[in-house]
Image (cartoon, rainbow, N blue to C red; front, side):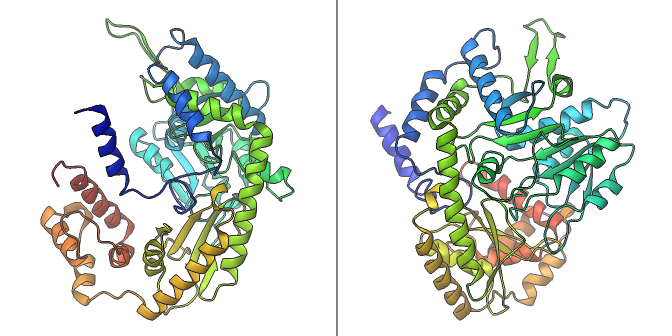
Length: 472
C-alpha cells in the first residue's frame, strides 16, 4: 500500500476514537492545551525511536536522559542524595516493580503479603497475581475513603513485605494519611510505597500555589519508594512513569540479570528488555521545555478548572461529590433515586463528553469519574450546563430496571463455570450484537453493577478475549 493511503486509513480509523484533545474526554488522556507540545514530543520521539534501552552503554543518550528525568522527579518529590530511580512504561509497571523489589528483598518469607487499602489501584492486585503475593485488603473510612492508619498498622504482620498508600487514590481523588501509615511500616521494618502515579507531578505545585496538601512524598520518614507517571500531569506522551527508591539498596532487588545461556548476559532494570528510546526522549523533551515555571502555570490552570467544576457539581440538584478530593479527580454520585449515573454517562456521551462510569464498592456508590486536565479550563461552564441537562434527561427516563429473567440469570452464574454460551446469552440480553457495544451503555453497566466483583471480572475477561479475536 502507498504510504499516503496507509496514513489516510489510519486517520479514518482514528475518527472513531474518543477525542484526545480539547478536554472532552475526562479519562485516559491528559491534555495540557498548549500548542506545539505534541509536535515537540513527536519530533523527539522520532529522533530516538530506533534506539534500544536494553543496553545503556550502547546508547548513552538514553542513559543521560533517564538520569535527568529521575533527578527531576526526585527533586520534586522529596528525594535526597541517595535517591535513585527508573523510568518505566507506565504506572502499572512502576507499581509492579515496587512489589517485586519488596518481595525479592525478603527471601526469608515463604508466603509474602502486601497490605493495601481497599482503594489502592488494581495494579497492586495485578502484581500480586503475577508474583504470587497475598494481598491483605484493609477497608477505608466509609465517609472519607481514605486509608485507616490504625487498621493498616494492625494488618502488618511477620509476612508483610510492603505497605501501600495512595496520593491520591484514583477512584475518589483523596490523599491517604501517608505519615502515620509510613511510620507504622517503618516501626515494623517493612517497606512503604506511595502510589503517586496520578498526583505526583501536580500535588507539589498545588502546595506551592497555597493548597493544603498533606505530606506524601519521599521526605516522609518510612516512605521507601514512590511512583509518578509522566504521561499524566507532566503531560508527556504515553507511556512513561518513574519509580523512585529512597536508596540503591532498596532498588537492587528490582534488577534482573541472567548469564545462564550462551548469548549476551541479559541485564534489565524494568520488566521489559527491549525498550524504545522514543517515549523516554519525548518525556525528556517535554520536561525540559515546560520546566518548573511551566508546570506551576499548568497546575494553576487545572486547579482553577477543578475548583469551578467541584463547586458547580456540589450545588447541582441530584448530584453529590464523594469524599474530599485533594487533587484533580472527582467522583460524582447520584443524590436521588429517581435516576442513575449510568444514564447520565450516556447522556453526556451524546453531548460530546466522556465521563467514566465506576461501579459501587463498599461504601462508594455508583459514580462518574472525572479526570480534570488543564485543557478543561475555559470549558467548565459548558460541561456543567451539559451535566445538568444530562441529569434532567436521566430523570425523565427514570432509573434503569432489569427484568427478573436477567437478574436471576446473573445470580445463577458461577464465575468458575461460565461457558461461552452463557456469555453469549448475556450479550443478547444486553442488546449487544457480537461484541459491538451499543451506543448507550446504561443497561450493560447496570447488569455489571449487580454482578459480584469475581463474576464481573470473569465476564469482562471473556469479553476481552472475544474482542481481541480477529474477525469477531
